[in-house]
Image 1 (tube, rainbow over the protein chains, first blue to last red):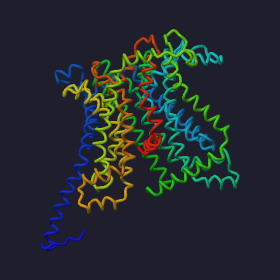
Image 2: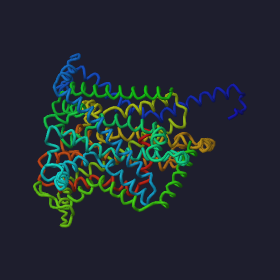
Image 3: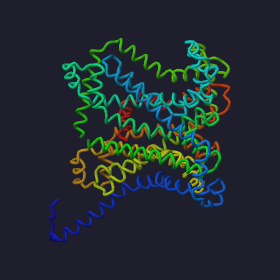
Image 4: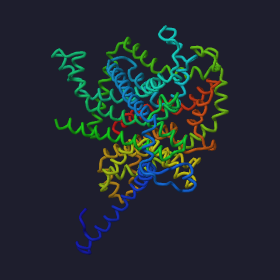
Amino acid sequence: MPGFGTNGPSVAVARRAGSRRRERFIQQLFLLPAVAYILIFFGYPVVKNVVMGFQNYSMKSFFTGKAPWVGLQNYESVVSSPIFSSALINTIVFTICSIAGQFVIGLAIALYFRKRFPLNDLLRSLILLPWLLPLIVSSAIWRWLLDQDNGALNRILELLLLADRPGWLTTTSLSLVACILVNIWIGIPFNVAILYSGLQEIPEELYEAGQLDGATGWTAFRWITWPLMRPVVSVVLMLGVIYTLKVMDLILGLTGGGPANSSQTLATQSYHLSFVQFQFGQGAAMANILVAISLIFALLYLYINKFAGKS
Amino acid sequence: MSTSSSLQISSNRKRRHRNNRHGGWRHTVFGVLILGILLFPVYWMVNVSLQQGGAAAMTPWLPIDITLHGYAKAFQDQGGHLLTSLIVASGSVVFSLLVAAPAAYALAVFRVRWANAVLLAILVSQMIPGIVVANALYGAYTKIGLLNSILGLILADSSAGIPFSILILNAFMRSMPLSVLEAARIDGAGPLRTLVSVVLPMSRNSIVTAGLFTFLFSWSDFLFALTLTTTDDVRPVTLGLYVYISGFISDWSSVMATSVLASIPTIVLLVFAQRYIAAGTTAGAVK
């Protein structure tokens, strides 16, 4: 906007600079509540957990305000406890198996829905239902489905003569399997939705051209679909890992980490330490280890992506 | 960016249209079968909720002998919790949008110096496990008296809605033509006035999407309900359901009836707000 006025150009410039500074200030006010919220509800907890991890922070600390500094003692006792190694392995197995199952089934369904048929849109939107249900509702439903004596799953398996009433949630060897199964069920819709929209971005012409060269079915998938889907796939998998690592509601609702800690993960164990045993220092230490793992994974993802971008 | 994406959408739509016309119903049958398997647990929830459900009884496969006693019990036990959930989720929608809308506007339109830093912080915040937040908030809430309070839950539950809303609103507002904002400015509207009477009405769809998802996030919250309440004064239905299923269950039909009631927002959303859900789901990937 040209500065026209009777005061001459220099005054106008100065006034404009002043009003611009004022405007800048107002603009930053718009951002202030969000920045404050993020600092309080994400920044503070991260810092507080790091500090708590070095303190003997128990229920008493909340009333006395005293939490003695104990150095690495929390980490030592957390890591040396026999639950830690099994929780770590469970977390890794739970994450890898959940992601693999969700992704493979999700991709298969997404590919199927590329076909042309009536009601395609309606069916595809209804698939989202399990993903949008509150996790604790899903846990409740599956608690009853997986019930040893009267659960629908065992009744179906028995009808098909496939198995003799396994105790999905009550056997140490099956509880994690059950959690993975349910988590796959919850994650399929998200994978279908994202992968399907990725598939839709691939121009049909490529397939038509491929067809002329004899590329159909698996060949078309291998040489057209898969390379073009790589970016979408890497996003889905990365988000999947980050979200799955911190899954808690589902396991607490299904098995509570049991029986005998057989389905305990780092996240649920952190909850147990803090809110069942009231060892907040140890709970924080455990949570920090979990954060470190997902941080390592995110950095690895960024590194690989950068590498893939270069080559 | 907006034109290319809207072109994409229209070409997708064209393609889909062609799909349907050439479609074979035999594919639909298999599609229904896939859906049937995936949604069987949901069917089972409804089925059990409508029948007499003792723990020792095998629920019949079809709800032929319908009884509403499960719902009666669910309302009696969980009615108050449902109301709490409704208040907390609605409060969280209002609070999240109040915080997120100006921020998204500032990030998208003003060239604020630390815009990228804020967006990065939001992305990183998605990695932070809820238990980390809960660990820290429990202590802070104890100190300032927010434990067992509606306000405390609204604030904590918004930790899902605020980042999501900022991202989704920011993505839309970036695509807004700057000429419209410039016009408002020339008409003498300040930034706040521009936001309220120009930007927000234009962003109606994204605001609805952000609001619906925020409602769903807060309604579904379990972790904060579990850790930031210690009495049953303020108890959302998710926690009520958890308390139900963590004890010995003698009556599954009321548990499943509660589950059905707790699923109502999801079902309403899926049926009536389909297009917003689709928008939010793909935004989830951008997130």
